Image (tube, rainbow, N blue to C red; front, side):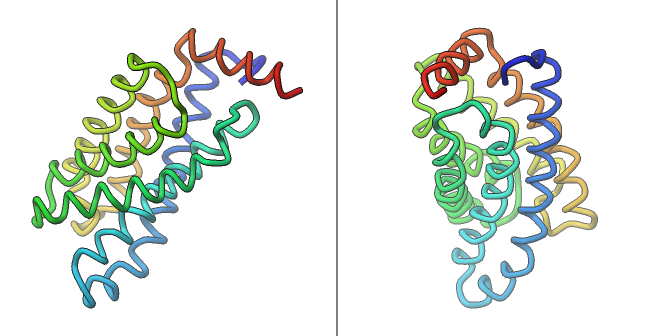
Length: 184
Protein backbone atom coordinates (compact mmCIF):
# COMPACT_ATOMS: atom_id res chain seq x y z
CA UNK A 1 0.00 0.00 0.00
CA UNK A 2 3.27 1.92 -0.14
CA UNK A 3 3.06 5.50 -1.39
CA UNK A 4 -0.70 5.86 -1.40
CA UNK A 5 -2.60 7.70 1.29
CA UNK A 6 -4.90 6.02 3.77
CA UNK A 7 -7.95 7.49 2.03
CA UNK A 8 -6.78 6.23 -1.39
CA UNK A 9 -6.17 2.79 0.07
CA UNK A 10 -9.63 2.70 1.69
CA UNK A 11 -11.26 3.77 -1.58
CA UNK A 12 -9.32 1.16 -3.58
CA UNK A 13 -10.14 -1.53 -1.00
CA UNK A 14 -13.86 -0.58 -0.82
CA UNK A 15 -14.33 -0.51 -4.59
CA UNK A 16 -12.46 -3.79 -5.05
CA UNK A 17 -14.57 -5.36 -2.28
CA UNK A 18 -17.85 -4.14 -3.81
CA UNK A 19 -16.94 -5.25 -7.34
CA UNK A 20 -15.83 -8.62 -5.99
CA UNK A 21 -19.10 -8.90 -4.09
CA UNK A 22 -21.07 -8.29 -7.30
CA UNK A 23 -19.03 -10.91 -9.14
CA UNK A 24 -19.57 -13.38 -6.31
CA UNK A 25 -23.33 -12.84 -6.24
CA UNK A 26 -23.70 -13.12 -10.01
CA UNK A 27 -21.51 -16.22 -10.15
CA UNK A 28 -23.20 -17.77 -7.15
CA UNK A 29 -26.79 -17.33 -8.28
CA UNK A 30 -26.12 -19.25 -11.51
CA UNK A 31 -25.55 -22.52 -9.64
CA UNK A 32 -27.27 -21.89 -6.33
CA UNK A 33 -30.78 -22.87 -7.42
CA UNK A 34 -29.84 -26.20 -9.05
CA UNK A 35 -27.69 -27.11 -6.03
CA UNK A 36 -30.40 -26.02 -3.61
CA UNK A 37 -32.82 -28.32 -5.45
CA UNK A 38 -30.50 -31.22 -4.58
CA UNK A 39 -30.17 -30.09 -0.97
CA UNK A 40 -30.88 -26.61 0.45
CA UNK A 41 -27.73 -26.54 2.58
CA UNK A 42 -25.63 -27.38 -0.49
CA UNK A 43 -27.10 -24.33 -2.22
CA UNK A 44 -26.31 -22.18 0.84
CA UNK A 45 -22.73 -23.49 0.99
CA UNK A 46 -22.21 -22.75 -2.71
CA UNK A 47 -23.68 -19.26 -2.37
CA UNK A 48 -21.54 -18.55 0.70
CA UNK A 49 -18.41 -19.71 -1.09
CA UNK A 50 -19.25 -17.73 -4.23
CA UNK A 51 -20.05 -14.49 -2.38
CA UNK A 52 -17.05 -14.78 -0.06
CA UNK A 53 -14.84 -15.78 -2.96
CA UNK A 54 -15.90 -12.68 -4.85
CA UNK A 55 -15.35 -10.43 -1.83
CA UNK A 56 -11.98 -12.08 -1.15
CA UNK A 57 -10.95 -11.78 -4.81
CA UNK A 58 -11.59 -8.06 -4.73
CA UNK A 59 -9.73 -7.70 -1.44
CA UNK A 60 -6.89 -9.85 -2.75
CA UNK A 61 -6.41 -7.41 -5.61
CA UNK A 62 -5.94 -4.65 -3.02
CA UNK A 63 -3.72 -6.79 -0.73
CA UNK A 64 -1.63 -8.45 -3.41
CA UNK A 65 1.10 -5.89 -3.87
CA UNK A 66 2.05 -5.75 -0.21
CA UNK A 67 0.81 -8.59 1.94
CA UNK A 68 2.50 -11.94 2.52
CA UNK A 69 -0.91 -13.52 3.27
CA UNK A 70 -2.49 -12.53 -0.06
CA UNK A 71 -2.09 -15.98 -1.66
CA UNK A 72 -4.17 -17.59 1.11
CA UNK A 73 -6.85 -14.87 1.26
CA UNK A 74 -9.16 -16.29 -1.45
CA UNK A 75 -9.10 -19.96 -0.32
CA UNK A 76 -9.77 -18.83 3.25
CA UNK A 77 -12.66 -16.68 2.05
CA UNK A 78 -14.18 -19.56 0.09
CA UNK A 79 -14.09 -21.91 3.07
CA UNK A 80 -15.17 -19.34 5.65
CA UNK A 81 -18.04 -18.06 3.52
CA UNK A 82 -19.31 -21.55 2.73
CA UNK A 83 -19.19 -22.57 6.39
CA UNK A 84 -20.70 -19.33 7.67
CA UNK A 85 -23.65 -19.19 5.28
CA UNK A 86 -24.33 -22.93 5.71
CA UNK A 87 -24.56 -22.50 9.47
CA UNK A 88 -26.66 -19.37 8.95
CA UNK A 89 -29.03 -21.28 6.69
CA UNK A 90 -29.32 -24.18 9.14
CA UNK A 91 -30.05 -21.86 12.08
CA UNK A 92 -32.22 -19.36 10.21
CA UNK A 93 -33.65 -20.87 6.99
CA UNK A 94 -35.64 -17.70 6.21
CA UNK A 95 -33.33 -15.05 4.79
CA UNK A 96 -32.51 -12.48 7.42
CA UNK A 97 -29.79 -10.60 9.21
CA UNK A 98 -28.71 -13.69 11.21
CA UNK A 99 -27.64 -15.43 8.00
CA UNK A 100 -25.53 -12.40 7.10
CA UNK A 101 -24.03 -12.18 10.58
CA UNK A 102 -23.02 -15.85 10.53
CA UNK A 103 -21.72 -15.48 6.97
CA UNK A 104 -19.62 -12.56 8.22
CA UNK A 105 -18.37 -14.53 11.23
CA UNK A 106 -17.30 -17.43 8.99
CA UNK A 107 -15.58 -15.14 6.50
CA UNK A 108 -14.03 -12.96 9.21
CA UNK A 109 -12.66 -15.91 11.19
CA UNK A 110 -11.13 -17.46 8.09
CA UNK A 111 -9.52 -14.19 7.00
CA UNK A 112 -8.23 -13.47 10.49
CA UNK A 113 -6.70 -16.96 10.66
CA UNK A 114 -4.82 -16.23 7.43
CA UNK A 115 -3.81 -12.71 8.38
CA UNK A 116 -2.74 -13.70 11.92
CA UNK A 117 -2.84 -10.31 13.51
CA UNK A 118 -3.14 -9.49 17.22
CA UNK A 119 -6.38 -9.95 19.14
CA UNK A 120 -7.37 -6.27 18.86
CA UNK A 121 -7.23 -6.45 15.06
CA UNK A 122 -9.09 -9.76 15.11
CA UNK A 123 -11.88 -8.52 17.32
CA UNK A 124 -12.36 -5.44 15.14
CA UNK A 125 -12.23 -7.53 11.96
CA UNK A 126 -14.75 -10.06 13.29
CA UNK A 127 -17.08 -7.36 14.55
CA UNK A 128 -17.02 -5.43 11.27
CA UNK A 129 -17.36 -8.63 9.22
CA UNK A 130 -20.28 -9.97 11.27
CA UNK A 131 -22.19 -6.73 11.72
CA UNK A 132 -21.27 -5.32 8.32
CA UNK A 133 -22.35 -8.39 6.38
CA UNK A 134 -25.38 -8.83 8.65
CA UNK A 135 -26.44 -5.30 7.73
CA UNK A 136 -25.66 -5.90 4.06
CA UNK A 137 -27.75 -9.07 4.11
CA UNK A 138 -30.67 -7.46 5.95
CA UNK A 139 -30.74 -4.34 3.77
CA UNK A 140 -30.31 -6.26 0.53
CA UNK A 141 -33.08 -8.69 1.52
CA UNK A 142 -30.65 -11.53 0.99
CA UNK A 143 -30.12 -11.95 -2.70
CA UNK A 144 -33.48 -13.47 -3.55
CA UNK A 145 -35.53 -10.27 -3.19
CA UNK A 146 -36.28 -7.94 -6.06
CA UNK A 147 -33.08 -6.11 -6.96
CA UNK A 148 -31.24 -8.13 -4.31
CA UNK A 149 -27.97 -8.38 -6.25
CA UNK A 150 -27.83 -4.62 -6.87
CA UNK A 151 -28.74 -3.79 -3.28
CA UNK A 152 -26.16 -6.33 -2.12
CA UNK A 153 -23.52 -4.61 -4.26
CA UNK A 154 -24.34 -1.14 -2.96
CA UNK A 155 -24.34 -2.21 0.69
CA UNK A 156 -21.14 -4.17 0.10
CA UNK A 157 -19.44 -0.89 -0.75
CA UNK A 158 -20.14 0.21 2.85
CA UNK A 159 -18.74 -3.07 4.14
CA UNK A 160 -15.66 -2.43 2.01
CA UNK A 161 -15.17 1.01 3.57
CA UNK A 162 -15.56 -0.49 7.08
CA UNK A 163 -13.01 -3.24 6.52
CA UNK A 164 -10.79 -0.78 4.65
CA UNK A 165 -10.63 1.34 7.79
CA UNK A 166 -9.27 -1.66 9.71
CA UNK A 167 -6.82 -2.68 6.97
CA UNK A 168 -5.36 0.83 7.00
CA UNK A 169 -4.95 1.25 10.76
CA UNK A 170 -1.55 2.86 11.40
CA UNK A 171 -0.13 -0.31 12.99
CA UNK A 172 -1.41 -2.40 10.10
CA UNK A 173 0.27 -0.12 7.56
CA UNK A 174 3.55 -0.46 9.47
CA UNK A 175 3.25 -4.27 9.35
CA UNK A 176 2.60 -4.13 5.60
CA UNK A 177 5.65 -1.88 5.11
CA UNK A 178 7.81 -4.33 7.10
CA UNK A 179 6.55 -7.26 5.02
CA UNK A 180 7.28 -5.34 1.81
CA UNK A 181 10.86 -4.54 2.96
CA UNK A 182 11.48 -8.16 4.00
CA UNK A 183 10.30 -9.52 0.64
CA UNK A 184 12.12 -7.15 -1.62
